[in-house]
Amino acid sequence: MPMLGFRASFLQPPRSATGLFFGPRLNVSGGIREYRGTIAARTIDTYSRQTGLPDAIRNLYCVGSATPAPDWRGFESSSAAVPTQCANGTTGSSLSQSTPPVALFAPDYALFESWRPQLNASYQLSQSYGLSLTSTYTVNRNMPGNFDANFRARQSFTLPAEGGRPVYVSASSIVPGSGAVAWTESRVSPLFAHVAESRSDLRSETRTLGGTLNYFTFLLQPGNTWNASVSW
Image (cartoon, rainbow, N blue to C red; front, side, top):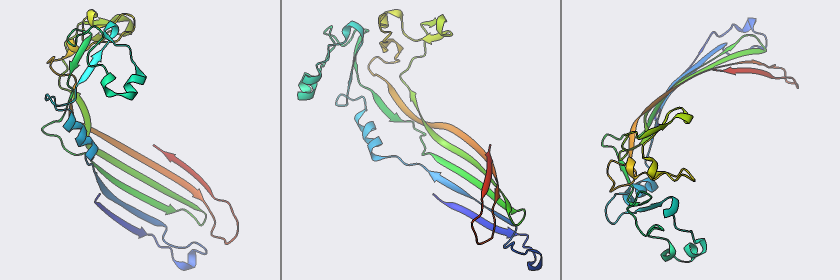
């Protein structure tokens, strides 16, 4: 997290004209800081287990009439009680799927980085009133996002009651009673489930400007302090 900064003071009033008014009237500071992202070890573990190879994890996906009745106590006592096929005895129908998910990094994946220049200024209006301004500009680059590389964006029909929302499977792959969707028809390759490709092609910018007007006293006795702030 490298940082480069500066600080400067201006408009030092003559002592004879200040009374209890100490120090420079104008202070300016600022700098620029870079933040860099990392990849956690547990993240790498997720990718190593979702390779799509025969020894990788697989998902059993059952919807509608193909969903087996859950036996939660049996699941808790032994992993052997966990179903390996759907209730209809198959794993290849439109409502029964058993395919491996895949997680991978895009070839041009880069770590997240953020540049944040900042400029601050404070001005002593009088003995009791001060004004401060703060401005920050943030540029976030290589922001991570997931893209399903196995998604086939071929529209089957739309839902007029929902603003023409597209549906990418046929009506036979949707359970009428619940609306659950079997997504095999929306896959480029039926041999794999979701192929989550981690990309770093997102970017964002943030601009912040703030100001504060404060009132205080230099007297060594109890007094009042007031602040009025605004941010945009």
